Amino acid sequence: MSLIVMKFGGTSVGDIDRIKNAARKVVAEIQRGHKVAVVVSAMAGATDQLIGYCRSISPRYDQREHDAVVSTGEQVSSGLMALALQQRGLNARSWQGWQVGVHTDATHGKARIADIDAIKLRKSIDAGEIGVVAGFQGVADDGRITTLGRGGSDTSAVALAVALKADRCDIYTDVDGVYTTDPRICEKARKMKCVSYEEMLELASLGAKVLQVRSVEMAMRYRMPVQVLSTFANEIGSDLPGTLVAEGNKTMEENPVTGIAHTRDEAQITLTGIEDKPGMAAKIFGPLARAGINVDMIVQTASSNGVTDLSFTVSKLDADRAVKVLDDEKKAIGFEKLASLREMSKISLVGIGMRNHVGVAATMFETLAAKGINILVIETSEINTSVLISDEYTELALRSLHTAYGLDKA
Ligand code: ADP
Ligand code: ASP
Ligand code: MG
Image 1: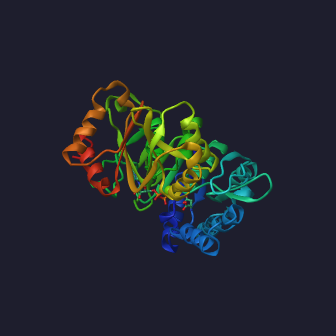
Image 2 (image 1 turned 120 degrees about the vertical axis):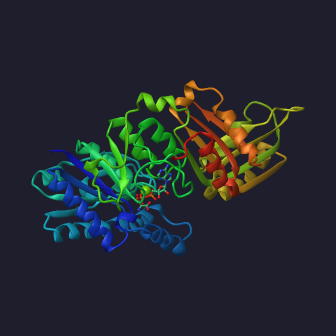
Image 3 (image 1 turned 60 degrees about the vertical axis):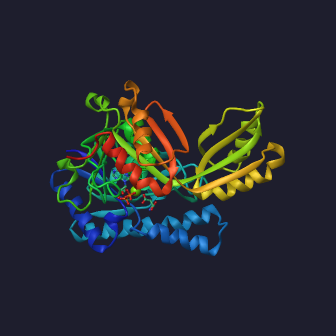
């Protein structure tokens, strides 16, 4: 007998029929002889609606009240799922984040889980109850409700699987696995049977939102097998129909590129005419960091006559604030001009095999050049190569790179 954590995302609990369908899958796992704990997201669209309410009342909202409102989506779906399971004759009970002991830090809106005191839940599972846990929520030391950031129910599920020492964490979603690239953009994307933690972490952090980055970090740290699978298919998790995120293997390392991720959330800011002397980067990035703005890709041009240009990317959502922070610091930094481009996209090749292959980046540049796509920034790490391009070319770039690296399905 195994203990399986089954997580149902927004689409999987999007309406009453889908909740009933998810409940059927829980019943099927139990009939196979497994113990189960369930984690649910809010019904599709609910979180966006709740965030919209907060913004329309007060654009500079209090993050604690924001979390009080936004966490309620999962309260509703966990109660409904418990009811659906009861309807099928199971002894089910819902648990909110605070009830199940999901302790987090106090960074409201993107809190990190410190620990889960799952003793009560464990006891109830051992007594034959099905615990339905509201994902996305936790509780800070001061007793206030926190939320874990968009897509955070994935992290709730993996964290709970670790705390309960489960055998596997199944993530039911609207696609039947992890693909070589977003299957909604590239119809030739191929489903992977398994993907290593390391590559999944890279794919997720570079934009493949199928799993929240922190859930992969946690699965990797505790070596928890995670399966991504479809809520619409007939098979259940124990049939292993999806993509298993687990330890890497040799076959994968032989392919230079395993997958391609993208984010359309990028803005590029360029400062021209900066004096080329020690301390300039600190003068620019210090105030941005203090304003809580995350900077991603950075390039500096070669200095000419002691003057240089610096270009970097931030999330589109932070672009206005970043421009303001830099304008306020204009005198202290001493740049000539500030320019910003908002509609940018970052395309990233990911693969453990890149470590041992030469020419991977060159193929990327040639492919994009052949399509007339201009590259604004390039960034490489051991297992990824990323470029910044204009957002209008996102689909074209993804599809042509997918073909160029031989990833298209047969
Ligand atoms: P849920 O609401 O179930 O958490 P998400 O919308 O967060 O679902 O994640 C699933 C989506 O992730 C898919 O619909 C797909 O468009 C997107 N996605 C992006 N990259 C990939 C990828 N490489 N493989 C599979 N899905 C991907
Ligand atoms: N409901 C939250 C969101 O929409 C958390 C999740 O679905 O994982 O981001
Ligand atoms: Mg998600």
